[in-house]
Amino acid sequence: MTQMLQRVFAVAGSTFWESVRNRAFIGMLLGALVLIAGSMLLSQMVVFDQRQRVVLDFGLFFISFTGVIIAIIVGVLLLYKDLAQKTIYALLTKPVRRFEFVLGRFLGLLAILLFMFIIMTGAWLLVLKSEGVILRGIHFQALFLVFIQLCIVASVAILFSSFSSPVLSGIFTFGIYAVGRQVDFINDLMTATKGPFASFPWLKPIGSGIVNIFPDLTLFDITRQILLDVELPWTFIASTSIYGLSYIIVFIMAAMAIFNRREFV
Image (cartoon, rainbow, N blue to C red):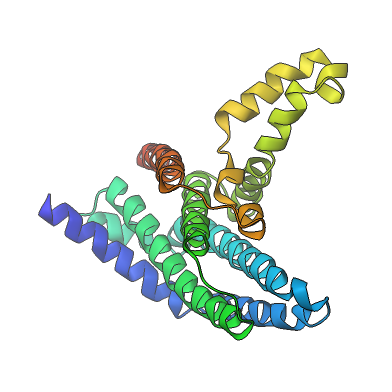
């Protein structure tokens, strides 16, 4: 077990340093910081009593969306790059099992996201302080849930990259993310007396499948509660985190199973 963990963390460490030195990653991170700082300029364009709401809303959005983009781009390229550059052959001739390699790549991606997340969060907190926003527990709850959402997207990216090309993996991963952001809306449409599901009952099985299979990413967005000054119990944060962790485990186990059976010739 100890040797296995050492191999996994060695792959994770290599993944982290490779990505941190990548100019594209640095460019995306700098772009995100510019957008977060730009929320201060946006706040100056609204009435005074709405400035804090703007930096709260846009700051969280930029952190979440930029994190998703980085998770998708880096995630779909990790396994493909090893196959394209033939480095996978050298790695697998060493005592590194395929599932250890996938798990190490995923943990390395999480380390990249955490590094990016800490920097952007620090910038956002500075913006909030400059606007006189009083930090409360719900702000840190929101940040925690955003990071869990990024971990889910990263696990989806690793899953698709285990058997598909980067372009298709990116499209599929972003599709899962986009649908996941609409699960709550689709669920409401299914219970409405008007709308596509009421007009075309044959669509309901499709809608039910989406609601039951796709991760509901709306659970990880509590911006509305922040703007309405609604406090959330930590039991909700815990249950939502377990919900997200369950999807992460399923996606990564599926990625390891698929990659283990993949032919590299």
